[in-house]
Image 1 (cartoon, rainbow, N blue to C red):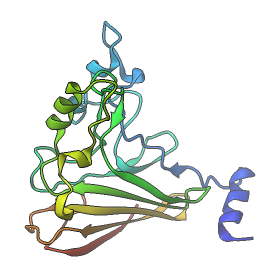
Image 2 (tube, rainbow, N blue to C red):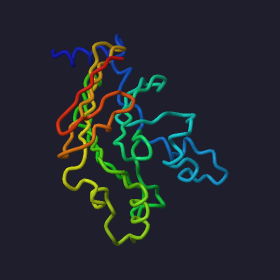
Image 3 (spheres, rainbow, N blue to C red):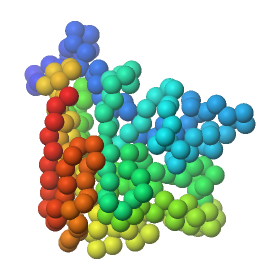
Image 4 (cartoon, helix red, strand yellow):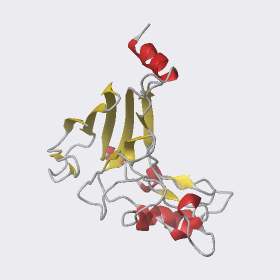
Amino acid sequence: MTQEQLRLAESNAQNTVWKKFGPYLTERQWGTVREDYSASGNAWEYITHDLARSYAYRWGEEGLGGISDHRQRLCFSVALWNGADGILKERLFGLTNGQGNHGEDVKEYYYYLDSTPTHSYMKMLYKYPQQEFPYVNLVQESAKRTREQPEYELHDTGIFDDNRYFDVYIEYAKAGIDDILIQITVHNRGQNWPPSWCCRRCGFAIPGRGATTLTGRS
């Protein structure tokens, strides 16, 4: 048996809680019915994306590329800043059901690349633009479109022209049920970029074209 098969067998037999930590941290708690305390029952308007960064949730947490225990008592996620945005990139941005011409829609590019059954290894890719993220433009342009028209996507804004973005790889590996190794690797896909860009909560800067890797342990 492979090591993952052994972990899975231990987990299924409830001998070792290998699934205690996993990709359980939601990427969008805002706008959900479980956090809606409005008089009208309009969850989309009660907690918006703009309010989320200064709101304390009652029933859960949210984060970008995060990990948590199965009760979300201990949560970890990534916060990014490109030196241009007015806010940190801490959660996925999307249109609410009323804002999108085809309804609710996430306006980001992110990919789940790997995960074992016990979440002993997980890997995700997030593509972060180097220019100011077009929050307002995405909302305004989508509002102009009808159901018969295609959706206005993030790449339609031109923000990825000339490869002006970062590839942010987020990896987790378990040495034990409560011993988690974390590696964040950032590739600068553009030609040049000021050294002010950083992963604020992780403490590294990207000096120019290339890659920077940060490792840590929980």
